[in-house]
Length: 388
Image (cartoon, rainbow, N blue to C red):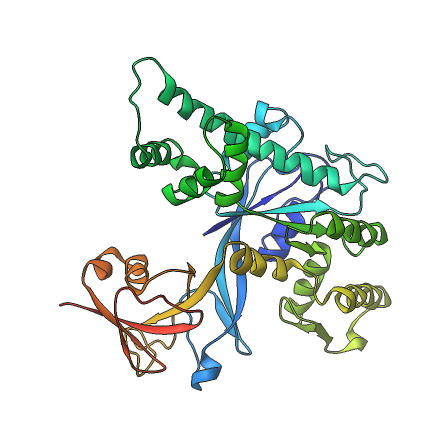
């Protein structure tokens, strides 16, 4: 799974990326600071099944702390987008190409209104304009790709398609955008190919949904603008975020100055080790967390995966009794899969050979045997049974 971080220049994308991954990247107030995409691993956080079963897990990927499982997801922070990007303005074409494999997009919006649509310093800029132009640019990018496919269908001597053939053809033409036949079919239920712009917009919303991170929420103007955005976009997921606050807390935790689990509150371990300036910063961060429950960065990633993409977490094991893999590691893996995934789908996701040899699955809680059509549930711990 890949989550793309998008937004205009100087919106805080690179700060959000650093906050989520702790990878040092160049962060400035200069537009187009990010040219080549930054790629790293962030994490979604779930309650680990170890607590329920009374065991201690040993993750193959990510980590687990105090019963919280950190499950890795790939993040891509791309170059800033400006109006006209779909026509190549700014770094538009490169930006859009870097998004092709993303499953969902987090739109980092400078909610403070202190940068204009091109990322230049200003005052009283309306963040609503940023939301509108970015979605429009991505929709126009989709439309340009789809128009080429439609042109092939309508050219002289072209073959007339039935619905199944049309889905297959479009899926092949749009495969570079990570668009599936199901995505296309769902979009065709809402609009036809005769209106390419509308179809493209619907297809983009289905195949690359967007969550809005109202960033710089630690600034007073951002808090005021966030309330306006909530009233305007009742159909979107909006999360107030302060990427700078998240970076500060993670750095402080690394130095054992605070105890902090991402997405939660923090505790100062020894105030006498902190300067007055550091205490003032932490006090400001505490005000943000008190008002919005967290810095928002972890909340944003979790909502992107579990609400926007409608995924669930599943633990496959080799031994349902011991909750281990073949090497004896307890609850070693967590797979993030879409709701509606079957036990057979999960087996193929683990490995093609396991899918081909699939016989059934065993629920570690009930010890019941499950068939290939069983729909896996969130937090399921399943042993996959295969033929020899």
